[in-house]
Length: 122
Image (cartoon, rainbow, N blue to C red; front, side, top):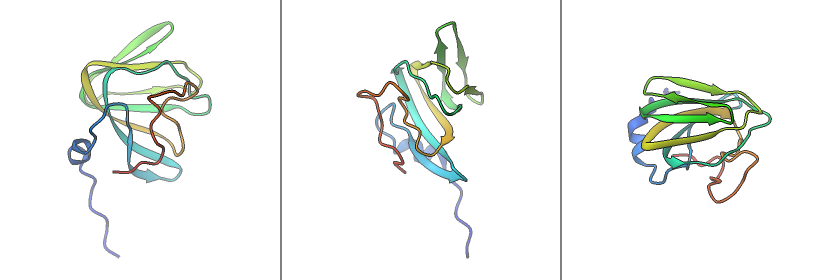
């Protein structure tokens, strides 16, 4: 059996047209590796059952909490602890990788118009 080719992040990101629509690029065990484009402000939400890892590829993003915020730049990552209410935003646009368990809804407990389809691969 031949090995699969490596995943080309920039090529995959070029296929994402809309911000806030994470797309799966790989799975390992019960976790999904997703790419997403951020532009503007998302929604306040919580993931009660899981942590959420963000790794910035290009641009900058902010993850805000009710008591403060953290700015993430290219090559940096941040883990949002489970149960911690947060909002993501990027004034100038951002490309990021997210690692989280399969089946996590991007809007967590908030739902709404920015809820992306789950398990959408590119």
